[in-house]
Length: 377
Image 1 (cartoon, helix red, strand yellow):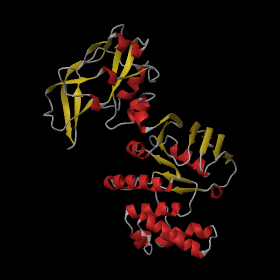
Image 2 (cartoon, rainbow, N blue to C red; image 1 turned 120 degrees about the vertical axis):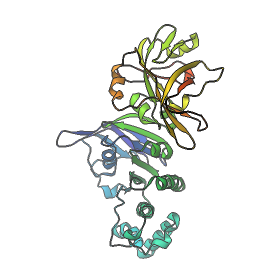
Image 3 (cartoon, rainbow, N blue to C red; image 1 turned 180 degrees about the vertical axis):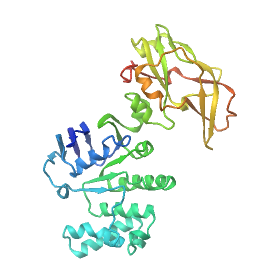
Image 4 (cartoon, one colour; image 1 turned 90 degrees about the vertical axis):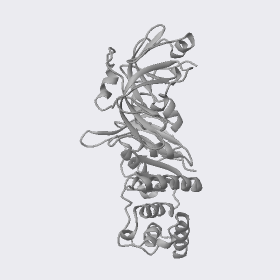
């Protein structure tokens, strides 16, 4: 068993900078738990706190109920894989794998058996005699993983291990990492800034910003019920579209349309009135059919054809709606709204286009705080 519990863990450096703010969560035995967020959000620092490379300035970290305060990193039974792989260049692959076992004082026959078993597991047996300089990026990543696996630790900690690989190899290695973790069943914490890695690798995902955890949930929960604007905009590619809106007693006003709300829709939204921020994912914008509720016209600004899908950038025209404060903070680096359409759609830049969406697909956020507005069943 290997369960990691963090209770209000914080880290403040000597210069006064706070890297982690009261992080509280539990990583369950055998779980793949992902820490994701933009660069500088504190995710790597949090990993260093867990493994013992940094000491927290507040809170408690426990492994299987035992406090890790004051426990040396080598005594925590955790293995870490770094972004740079951190292989010894003067040692062969086999010697790199054997090195932590020699440090632990294991007998030579057991070392040889473990190295051979790990090499078979990672399909690197034919690389055991090579030096790291003679390996590809993917091979080095496997060796780095092997050096962690060979120790048979309770916990794997991976700090952006795929960042140095090209896009195609990252996709292949993501699938390999999932299969490997499922086979070993080892509790795994994985740090990344790539939301695609987070969504594909994680049983659960913690999204961080400014040292704080914004939301923890399964990938499906984060995608369909983001807690706030930051989570909604961070998860999904292309990002969720955000629009200013206004709720009245019987309608939702958007920059491109006024949508009547029936009693059931109004009841679902609850008592919210006045300005709101409306979120709509690109794939929920579609070409109209006769039975759709909300249809609006726009101008195609730009078309990106990707083979299996097409991203259509939209010009909604001028709007009389004021930007709520929380949305105004996003407009500087937000592109125009995007629709993800079928690649067979005959769409060209400059044309007028009608699109539609379901009212149930909308996400509503508070105009000042950016928090998701509660919904009634």
